[in-house]
Image 1 (cartoon, one colour):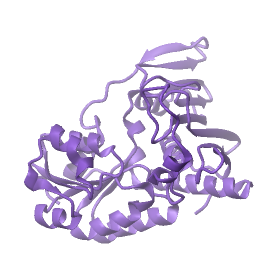
Image 2 (cartoon, rainbow, N blue to C red):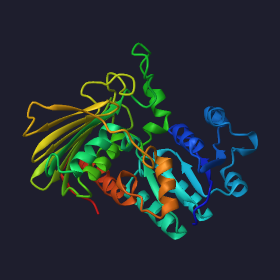
Image 3 (cartoon, rainbow, N blue to C red):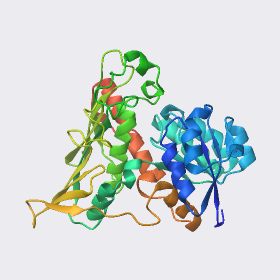
Length: 358
């Protein structure tokens, strides 16, 4: 598709309210225009309508009408995790590029359906992981690529929140009931649970840190409150060569990280042959250990620059220049992440170590 002054963007399906941020990025981009938005429940679109000044004639409750009448070049979609493949298969035949909010899919089979649909349409697919834009993780990746901590051996990840339907700001709010959990798509067996919600973050960015290296074996365990249909906690051990990496997920942290960092902190600790890095979500600094500074050195995080300041800006840059989508947004790295997630889910179910699924 040739370079153009304005990319026509549509937002389809607001199940996951990360859509608000993604459409705000599109609204603020000089080379983009939001030509339509669609969700079956108009209430879910009101914040975006106000933030992005979207006129009424560009607001739809029928996604087909939105696609047919607005003729977008790019679709941003944020469906429930278990519906990603269905929505990409619906949207792809319109000949559009697609940016999907994380996770890649509920399972590897669904991810491969998405890849196949976009390949048939001859359009680009990218999967956005919000953690991929956090300055601490960008800084850590740069230091790894520069060889500052030598060869990466271990990635240790902990992340989560108080729960997807919990009150994140009020620790005194009533606890979410079992009935409320069972009524939410977040707790649906097809794509729900803390493992699906957060393990993909850790292992996809872990694949980025490892520059595409795959683990050979996965061991995982999962837990949760009695009666809850899906897991609310998981611990995954991944073998990379001689060394082990660990990835922990939790719905039910004491505090939510975007309000107050819980303990353990959400983020990463990376161990290389020549040093270590502690890069935690949202923080303005990282801690670097090297042989020269074994006591640890506090470093200010890098400030992202164009065209890598947000997912929409980056995706449009790739479309305009013909550059391949790389890193955590790439199909290549995201599929490896999905392989790990699926293998972890199988290991937790069978209570046995598993070779990485193909």
